[in-house]
Image 1: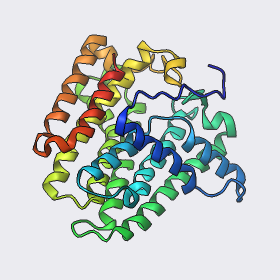
Image 2: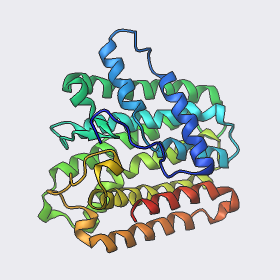
Image 3: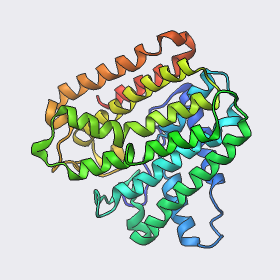
Length: 304
């Protein structure tokens, strides 16, 4: 795949999940400042990072959960898009030379390779700022009974902060291979990757004003889904090519991963077990939770 090219449009998502992805895809660029507005380079980098080809699985999760509990799509689409903004911001940081020093992301040169490190950093903070601005504004418009805008902002901040994504990334960078066992690796990635999946699911439930017990169901589901997703990412790193993934592979050669600890078969088995827990937690919701079961099947398929 040549730099600047894009991966094939087929993401493996089907049916309603594909429809939700397309809705998100159309909305994302509309929520950012226009490219012609100053500072143009920062805005261009924000658009570049946010609209590069991706599965949009996190905002799809938000939308699917909200629909399960009866919310109308037009009322929670922008909330779902804030999750993708946070994800895109985290990828910019994750790819920096001081982090993973990645050259390729989603089939294109990483943001710092395309715009320089300084602009990439500003774009990442710009996306985070825009996400919280939207979250506060759209949350107020919902006028929910069970949850407040502060609840939504608090959940998102926790997902990003030192008890979430930032904390997991920090421990990942600090940990020496000889210190890592399965328990510590699970802790790192339940924060580094899983925290944003958890926030995505909870945000969808809150946007629909779901009952507290239903929010707890979604939390259990999303927590297991997020960790399983990270394990399948580790599997893709060793089983796939850049043409298939749209990003650098073999990036984890110097790190301990689930595959290195458990082997390919063991990692696949652990991902399957986590997804079984995730799907099992949905039983009280009956057939209406089928879209979430489809997401779990999609994640499992990534690791095979």
